[in-house]
Every structure is written in C-alpha cells, then in structure tokens.
Length: 612
Image (tube, rainbow, N blue to C red):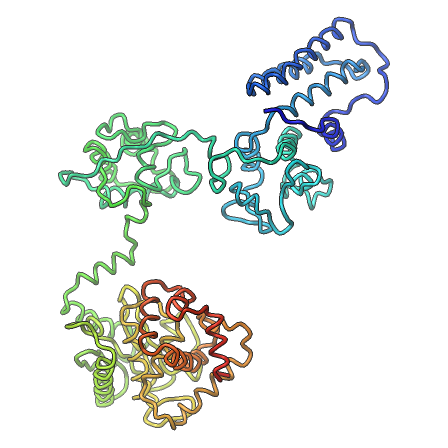
C-alpha cells in the first residue's frame, strides 16, 4: 500500500516545533571531507530502497534500513561547520523515509497513549469527559471536541495539545513534554488517516498485539476429589491472593479473575500444571520456598491452605463450579450471604428464639437501665417500656390488622408473614423513640412529624418496626397509636421479603392501609403536606427517586402517589410494580415496564391530577 504525504510540510511542521535538528540556513564555512561526502551519497542511495520495501509490505526491513542510516549518520559525528547541502539532503531524505513507514495504531500509537495518557483518561478517570482506553472511546472525543481530523494533523486537537508551548494546555498534564519520536509517531498516524488496525474498537487499546494464550482445558470435578475448588481453593485465592492478581494489571501478568485465567498462568507459563504440583510454580511460592514468598506483603497464609492447593493440583485441578468464565469472587459467598444461608437453615423454633433474643438485645443497647417488657402473639414480639397491658393491647391491634391484610393480600398457602415473628418496639415517650433512632441509626435526628419506621434487611437479620406510643388522640401531625401500628405493619407486610422498595411506595402503602377515617384531622392534612412538598417540583421524573423529599414529606407524597397509581392501574398494576421492583430495584425501569410510561411522563400526569 502506498500513501502520499506532504513531506515538505511535515518537515516544516517538525522543524517549527523543534522535533528535528535545525538544518543550516547558509552554506557551511568548512567543506566535508571527500570520503564522508561520498558515504553520505551512498547512504542516500540506500534510503531510496525504502519506498520499494514499503510497497512490498516489508515494513520491518524498511525500518531496519532507516535505523541503519540514522545510526551511521550519528556515528560520523559531522561538526556543524561541515554540514553542507549533502548532509541536509540526506537528513530530508531520512525524514521522508520515516514518513513513508505506515504507522500502526495498535503497535506504535497505543503503547505511547497507555504510558502517557491513561492516568487521566483511562478506566478510572475521564478528565475532560474523555476516555482513551479504547479506540471507540477515543473516536467519541471529549468536552473539547474530537481528538483527530484524519489526514490533517495540524488541524487536530490531539496534535495541538502535544505541541503547544502553553504548559497549562499541553498534554500530558503535569508531565514532561512528550519526546520527539513519540510526537512524530502520533503526527504521522493522524496524517495517514488515524486508522484503527486492531480487532475490536471497544477492546483496550493495544489489545490485538498482546499474544493470546491458547485456550485452557477445564476438567470438571468427578466428586471423588478430597479438595473442592469452590469450597476450599476459591475462598483462599479471594482472601489471600487476589489483592495482587486481579483487575486489569495483575502482578506478574497472572490474573485470578476467572478459573480459566487461573489455569492460563502468568509469565512463567507453568503456574498451575494439573496433576503435577512439582512442576506448578504456584506450589513452590506458597509451600516450598524458604522463606515462603507468597502471599506477598503482610498477608499470612496457613500451611493447611497451601497443602490443600497442592492436593487440589495433584488431583487434576478440577472445577466444581457452574461457569469457569465467571469471576472467582462470585463463587465465594460474602459474609452477608453466609449469614443469609445460616438464617435460611434455621428451624422455625430457632428463628423464634432468635427474635426474642434480638428484641431484648436491641432494646438494651438503647436503654441499658430499662430491660423493658416482652409480649408475644402469633406473629409479633412486642417489646417496650409501656405497661404490659398496653403492650398486649397493641399486640391485639396488630393481629387484627394482619388478619385484614392477609384477606386483602393473601399469602402463599401455609406461609407466615415473617419467619420467627416481627419485632414491634414500643417507646412510651417521644424521647425514648428519638433515642432509639439516635443509637441504632448512627446519630440520625428524627423529624418531629415522624413517629415510627419499619426495618427489614434483605438477609432478614433485622425484622422490626419501632414506634412512639402516640396515644389515642389524632392530630394533623400524628395518627393514633393504633393507626400508626396499622401503617407500620402494612409497610412491613408489603416489604416482608426484604426487597429494596422505594420509601415513598412503602410509606404510601402503609398510610393507605392505616385505617384512617377520611374526615380525620390527619387524613385531611395529607394532601396539603403533599402539595407543599411538590410546589417547587420542576423535574417530574425525580418524584419517584428516593431522597427527593425529606423524611416528613415522603409519607404524604407517597400516599398521594399510591392513590394515583391505583386510579391508573388498579391493584393489579400496583402488585406488578412491587413484583418488578423485587426482581430489580431500578425504579424507572419498573415504572416503564408496569405502566408503559417513563417516570417523567407519569410524574407529569401525577402533577396535573391535582397533586399540587
């Protein structure tokens, strides 16, 4: 492939930016020795072969010839006063020869960018809204525009940033000016069309030049092994090794991100040899060398773990997971997942005992000097500092309301609302409820209009509601204690599986099911509070986002939203919305899937309905 370039313009551009040594502007004062002049002529003749080599795609030979001439010219060490037209002519011919070599993005440009640019424009940073970690991202440009104008380097932002004399604007930022050879390479790449010669525009730059290891053969476990990869080896690797051997730049080029990469090995090529621990370098590192070199740093490894690794390799390094391409981290349960499994394995009796113990333990954290009183019902553990008769009354209220909820929203046959019962914490005084929140919620202050809340964690470690016994009188800011109990139980019932549901949905549903008389002072105040919260709303889509409204606004707005959704999709629509959110907590997606409208469109309809 032959390409035509404006060679003289290139030399002028390079000269103007100090990228090649200045050529003499006037005849030299001293003459070159005849033998040197003759050799320069012979070198110039040799350089003419470059065009033919490039045409025949013998690029490496062309580069070698250019290097040979360049090295010889440096060896001659011609003094400045002897550099005449023969010398200048050879220098220009040399630059033209360099310019004729096709520049590979993957082989030539990518290494320069990876070294000098990805610190600010890579995977973890996108300064100026620009990422250069893949050719596709480079082609998109950044806040300042496109990086390159193919074929026009002097009109390209990329070249301008490299050549500018303004240190505040020059790239790489806060680093030495890019070397002459590197700038010349990038300049010529843009001049030649800024082409991509890799295999995948979305792959990391330079990826196609990295030698790909042959595919590994994964042998599946037979069940006769004494050591399990999933249960014994994977946890060891995650805890002790993957701090260094994971991510994009694993130490020693040895990645343990997946089982296949683990078997692929690193630079040694023989990190793990299935069936042969003696030839497996990893065994030497963790078990046999003196001193033991791995794991590195301050990570300590038990000898039993290293021996298990050796045994696993001797038994064939077999895989007992479901997908060797999956991350090894995903095979190792987190502490939360372990706790969830432990809770799931508990019997109903064990879970009930756990709830009773939890109620007493949590209350003691809040009120060390007052153990409180416990009352149990079929589905509830009521614990607090009110009188026993009052706690029994609240337990009866709760069971009555649960009967109503189960009739309206039936549970699967034989299923209880909560395993081991739901804990109901009752604070006799307002101060006690605020102290409960202060202790258990890291010092969070409680708004005066908030008198209760529900907490159900995804792993069911905590399943409780907490409330201030507001008494039997209603006001614009407070329900009665029974209505508050109903609201919180409804919220906990809706969220009984611990799913991540938005606060407005949980609290709105709870208020709707609280049993409020329509003409009560609290019920009449809800639309007023909601309208006040919505009065400055300019982005309807944000209505459905958690955190849009303050804690004392979320309940009223949520109540109005739930009523609006029921009018526009009925109870089937609300059930589907909850179902969608249980599968995926992405609220905009769930709203689109359920109602066929975007959050912005639905939010606008809600506001037009008279919500404000």
